Image (cartoon, rainbow, N blue to C red; front, side):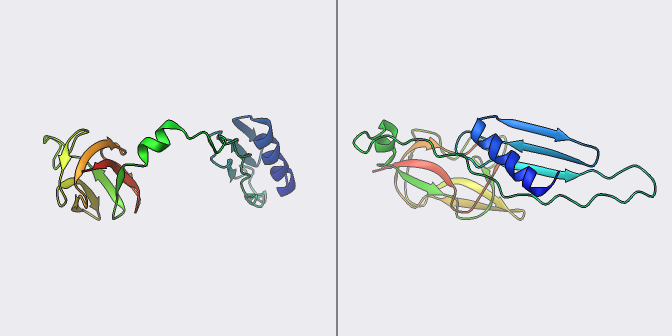
Length: 168
């Protein structure tokens, strides 16, 4: 299978609405996944080594660019979704560093904050562990915790939303 055939197969999968296609041949495996929630189609191409002694292994198949599925239609401009107007009044506390997010100081301790808690500027809201250092993350605003956006003990990226706060 050459690169053009792989690209055509990706286009076919993204247009047809098929969620996943797997192809296995003697010298390679191909998996194409199409995620419908506006995430681009992904593919994994892995050559498999031939078990025949003295045989020349096939050249690796180059990965084709992922095809983005068509955009979903948006609501008309005069119709504003309810949750969009609700969340616009909230302030987001974001991760200042990359690391692992922890809601509590120790596994046997209660979380720093819960939904409904009132926080002040400077209150510790969580810990982010980075390179074996536990960094206390302090709130930059005063308000009420409305939503915790991250599960405990999960990796976070820089500037990733952690909490929604209703300012006071």
